[in-house]
Image 1 (cartoon, rainbow, N blue to C red):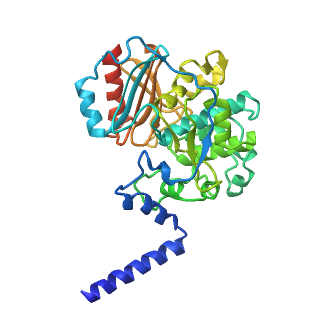
Image 2: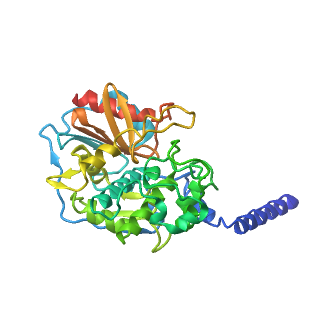
Image 3: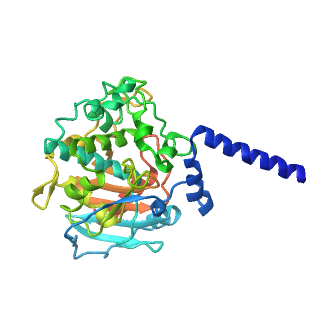
Length: 383
């Protein structure tokens, strides 16, 4: 027994030395936030363990509430899905009015949770706003014009559009289950800029769709250089305040006073998250204020002319928005890890919002099973 303990101690020392030598000391933070708190990965309320910048709100603009509010019942099949996947919020907005909402697991209209990759749609929107303001000339500009240090590794041909459409060709591995991979380091580490600036283009940009969180992070650095403002400052000024969000949001950073984790980690509630759906459903116009050019909205929710990794046409991505045609309906949506959705169904003038702790099975078409189930539930209730 004594020898066994000695071996365990030696292995423990060696593992720690390996972590220190490799420079991956952020692993300790990851372990303390996940395994030591009973989790095996990220979770929707882990934002409290990271530093954050405040996204200031302005005068609250209340959502209209339908006279038919909560008169319909959730279908039985979606109740089972909600139980299994631990849904925390489900909301349906139709004709610019909330027609249904329900919360579970002690969440409410005011409860904040992590957007995860829904944040990517906000970064795309900021690119569009910066173009509208003339701070960015066009999406065809080279990224190096704004981040010259990025060119030092031979990335001169990558454009803003390549980043928007996830076709940069950079050497990034979007793996959520590798505890020492790039995605984990981006989430738990403290040097986002160093991590993505050092990436290299290993494939011709603009050809193949490969979902990379690094693309969104680079877009955020472009926005900051173009506007002279942090992501939190710019999203507050151009979106959060004009759209009348009820609460300030928190955008987690890689360290105190550091960079926003733009590929994820905007923390808010269902009602405030849903506002970006209304903005796009109204082609960039918010109650008479044209925040975003309608031409950019149209491009953002259109299919990018790319191939997938198997050499087939990519049919489900635009500018940081996911796209689908389901039951004859053209649908676009913001999507985040573990099933965070703001789903827009223009032909029904409907927005479906779901937040929760787990998501359904990943399907061959690039969407998740629960994405379709939440749409089915909304359509059954209000079609």
